[in-house]
Length: 116
Length: 107
Image (cartoon, rainbow over all chains, first blue to last red; front, side):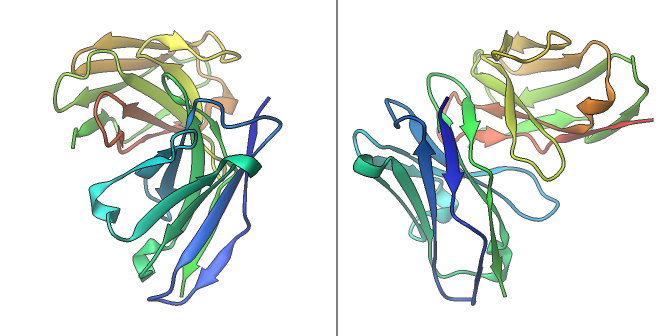
């Protein structure tokens, strides 16, 4: 059973960048997409973007366009999400989630990023 | 972007009650609709995909229905472990969008 294991919590200064990793243990990316979803404190879920690791193709939500970069290393089954020009309102839990033909069926444990 | 409107935003029910949540899409999304459960402090979990299909391992008290723009999520008999926030999500069109969530509490 594939698990997604994310990197640990991070604290960043406004204006800096953060890079969060998401490793698929117990399997490979296969033909799935890896999505990044964030959740600000007390708020709902917000999709940021996704990557098709086998093709290296990424799509981004318009509101993050230009600030977010999603990449994947097939050899290590690891996806990355880098968010730049951090603002206080980027403080959130960032999740990676695998999606196949339908829903996001496997989620990482979440990475707390605090901008302070 | 497709807007997903859930209601209610929160509810309180007794153990054994039937709980119903609705989700409305701003345009036709056919059956490209998923439901997730998020327990406090945990990552979301997929419960129902394609509007009405139960994800493997999910108890049968959870049910989804609907198509087009109007969808319903039901817990047939509420249990204490169902305390969570529930989200609908469309994947008909990029970007995938979520409803604002329904927080379910037990009386």
